Structure formats: structure tokens, C-alpha cells
Image (tube, rainbow, N blue to C red; front, side, top):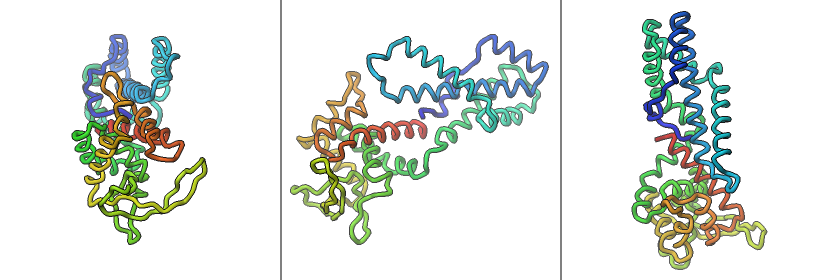
Length: 296
């Protein structure tokens, strides 16, 4: 969900007719004016959430055009209106905060809108990350710096690297360990190839061979830190002949790297034997990017 405190400061406002209605309502029923203002701002917020979700979903192709886009926006607006003002929702929190801030004394539409923006700015950080498991947020925060350093050195998107580490390690819950329980810091599942001279750990893993899943014991690389793991992964993808073109093959004309294209190119290059690996990785990349935007 691409939301942040900046949403509440981007000039949100209601139209002239709504302002007149609020002014009239404030005269007749101050409490109702507060509730209506809160509902309007919740509706605006819900529209932004839906817009962000649409933006993070890949277009379906030839059936996408300005007409379908307009129809989608109208449906989103209608849905946002239906979802707003429900008991226990964001509008309830805004209403309570407005009543505390204003003491039901200054209820001009301008004052109500200004107070609502302040309330949204306070509420959005918690709302944006609501429902995101703590271990997911912790994993992203833990590896953010390492991924960004690796991106600066190689150009591989940091979000993609964090996502692949998350996918391979189950958000850190299935990290490869030695027989003595020691950490390998290998969150990418990189095997120890014949040219690897560093430490290794033996792990029983599942490989798909000729369409059949088999349990095999394989050697995996071990690192002294997660920084080393991210550096090694980035170096492998950017310099190994097998993977060197993965990023460029998935890059758009505007410079952005497509998550699905990246995942498919990586699978085609032989990174994993799971036939569904590309789809799984692409979903994890999109999830990671949405969470990162929500946490920004």
C-alpha cells in the first residue's frame, strides 16, 4: 500500500458545493459537520489507497485503454465512498480527534479541513503498516542498508534483492544454518560452486529434476555477515555470464526494472529449478515494494 504522511499534505480539499454544505451543517448540527468532514477525508484516503494498489499491479495489455482506466477510477471512487464512514474505521478516529482539537467551538469548513489534514498526518503512519506482520517489517528494515549499498555498486534494484532474500529465506524464518545451528547469513540460497573458496554448509534441499521433486544434500555458501551475502549476490548477478543480462532484459525504456521480467529472466538463466519460481519471486518483489512504500 503506497501511503505516507505526505498524503495528508498534498492539498486535499473538497469542492465548493461540499464546503457550502459543511457550512450549513455546522450551523445546524456541529457534531454532524465533524462526522461528515471526517468521512470525506476517509473517502479521499481510500481513493489514494486504491490508486496506489492499481499502480502496483501490472497492466493486462491490449485491453487497457483510457476508457477502461476511467471506468476503473469511477468504480474505485464509488467503492471508497461505500467503505468510508463505517463503524470503527478511520473516520471515527478523525472525528474523535477533531472534537478534541476544536472543542466543537470553531467549526468553519476551513478549520475543519485544516484539522482533518493534521489528524490524517498523525494517523497514516500507523494505518499504512497495519496488518503487515512485524517479522516482515523487521526483515526489510534489517537488510535495507545492505541492499542499497549493493544497488549502488551494481545497479540491481535494492527492493528486488531484499525480496529475493525474503523469498529464499521465508522472511528470515528459514535461513540456512550449519549442522551446529550456526548462521550462514546466506539469505539468497546461493550454492557453493567449484570456484567458491569460502566457508560452506551442507543442507538437504529439494531440487526439481525432469519434472520430479527430489531431496538432495548440497553445499551452500556461508558468509560472515549479511552485508557479505548481499555483496556476493549482487556480484554474482552482475558479473556471472549466466546472469549478466538479467537486469537489462527486464529494464523498461524509462530505466525502471520490471519485477516480472527480472524474475523470469533469472529463472530462465537457471537460478532455481522450481518451475513456479518466477511467479513466486515476482509476487514477493511486488509485496516488498508495497510494504517499503507504506513504511516510508
